[in-house]
Structure formats: C-alpha cells, structure tokens
Length: 132
Image (tube, rainbow, N blue to C red; front, side, top):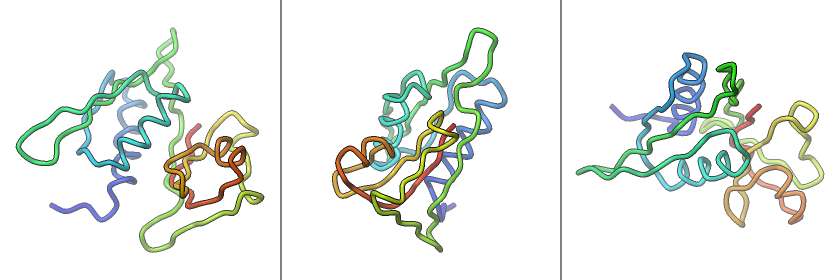
C-alpha cells in the first residue's frame, strides 16, 4: 500500500506510540524522515533512532523519551504543510511554538532545521511539523 504523505504517517505513529507509552516505534525509512529525526533528537524530543536495513527501503527504529513519571516528551506533533497545500514562511514570519516551548521543523535550502536555527541563518522555508 502506498502512502500519500509519509511525513504525516510518521508523525501519527510517533503521536500514537508516545501516548500509548511505547518505548520504541518502527517507521519506513527515507532521507527526509531521517533528517527530521535528527532534529528531534538534537532538540531532546526523542531518545535516539537507528536505521535498520532490510531487502527493501529499510526501517527507522525510534526510541521515545519519557519523564520519570512516564509522561512523553512528545505531547503534540502536527503536520503543517501537506502535499495538497504547501505552507511556506519567510524568516520574519516564523513564530515560536507554544511561546518557545515547542519547535517547528522547517525544510530550508540548507536542509531540515528548527525554527530557531532557520531564524539564526536568515532562512525561511516549508513548515513540515510543529512539535511540542
């Protein structure tokens, strides 16, 4: 079965697994998903991830992060730009998520960055996800 929006599919899997208290979740691998996971790891929303190869495209195993009281670090993850409606913002239009408590994951000409990194580099781009 083909997936029309693999980034939204990954976001849904992360949201469901974190709310269910799962320690890990497997998603189909792609370069853009790996770049998004790298940003989520740098911003401490996930513990770690690793790429596992198989005969096809491979799998990304994502290890989720929880507080001491089993509260997930990813409380909300939302797909903003969709295949049918792309959302682009300039560097001056990037607003903080939850007053700076969350991040926006942005696809820029310099790769996948957070909203803070994009502002520092004076870049705008496509808003992929908002994570809080």
